[in-house]
Length: 195
Image (cartoon, rainbow, N blue to C red; front, top):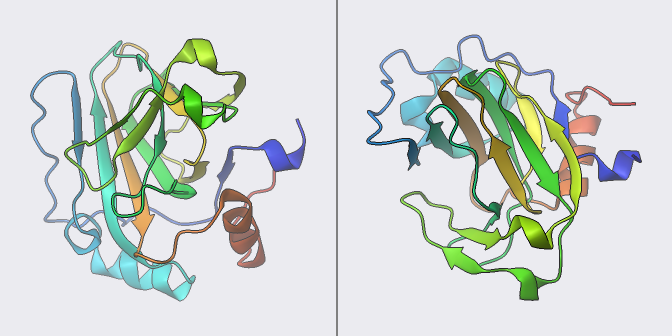
């Protein structure tokens, strides 16, 4: 796989004090949940100041919950609520979810899109059926913050442990195409290069 096809990179960002000490995880009802807390609610001010010093300005997070063995039934692309354009990237880390992984697929023609689904969060999904997709790669994301590509179809394969994913999202207007985001993190010396 060429470096231009990579869909994730580990990054050199300390998340040891990322969560606001007053933050409490929501109580899921069922095996799936998605929430969109404001950055200042879920993240500590110290961490927001630290990441701002790195040139990263977060507006909110997406918080995903999946119960054990609740693998995605379709792939999706993160889609901006206002413009319906695709969102290029996010910074994710996971609590729990051992034996789970994130999968990416090549973008088919948009005629393969099955729906734009509104979720209970700020980001609707454009969905795709697996039969219409070609696999690219996978990554197990745990407690290492990871730059992930969100503008092509992706999904989650679950193991037998519940999974919380914290997905830090930039302020409005800071989104950029995936390859530009990779270069931005590279110029900030935050990217852990892959071979």
